[in-house]
Image (cartoon, rainbow, N blue to C red; front, side, top):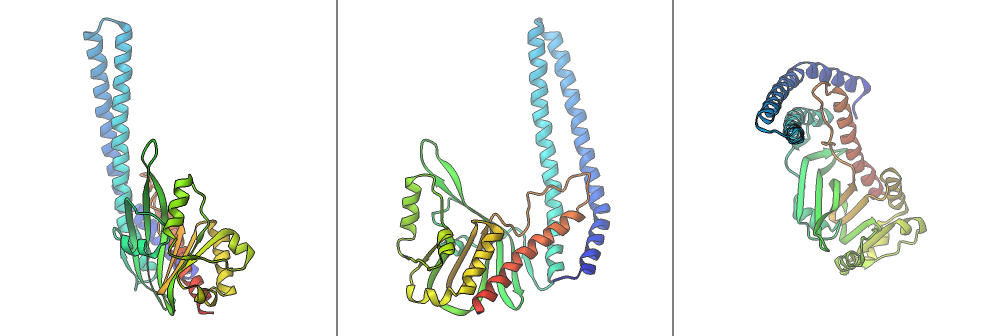
Length: 316
């Protein structure tokens, strides 16, 4: 964990850099968008003149002017979003590796990679055959002496009804850590689901049919979590009071979004809704990114804290 002085120094460096290259780049992109606005106004003026010369009805002229304004406005908005996304992407590619290195210079970071589909699917964190899967912000290394890998994961399944639609099965952080204790089977701890319909409930039950549904014996825990395992006799040795309390503590932090899987010497931790880095943040043209840097650092530290919390509970 970095000291306050180190974080402050990193914040100042980020502020200085934000006032430098990125400020200049933001002004450049802002100038590009200003030119687009000028072109849009010229096109609109041309549409007004053309409609006045070619059309006789005042209603037709007015409709033409309004439609041309809508079309030009749509293109300008599209151009703005593309420029903003390009700027955000440049910022992400420059900032996020620095945040990881600042956290621990031994960590490896790959922005456009993630925990692979088959690893996540084989963990049985969530059921379903994913029709869309994406991983990003992959980080691996050692934290508090524990080897781990983590990434953001988006997994979606297809639902069929009157209309086909994608349903998000999981969108959050997944962390896989090495465990000194070897669990001889597969144990899944996951929040009790709320189903959209009877078909979804049947799919859920069929997916975990090969496992035994286990009642742990702690009323509060059993109320919120489903526990499945193919090795029932060893479950209660692993699910100590300390581990149960730790899972309940995670639930208090993250709500009904906590998933935990034990499989051999690996522990898979999933927090739906928590991200390694929140990439939905917009680093706007007229602002610096120093505040965002501190937020991203805090988000990474929250994800890394999962390693420490779960490892400590498992070792007891």
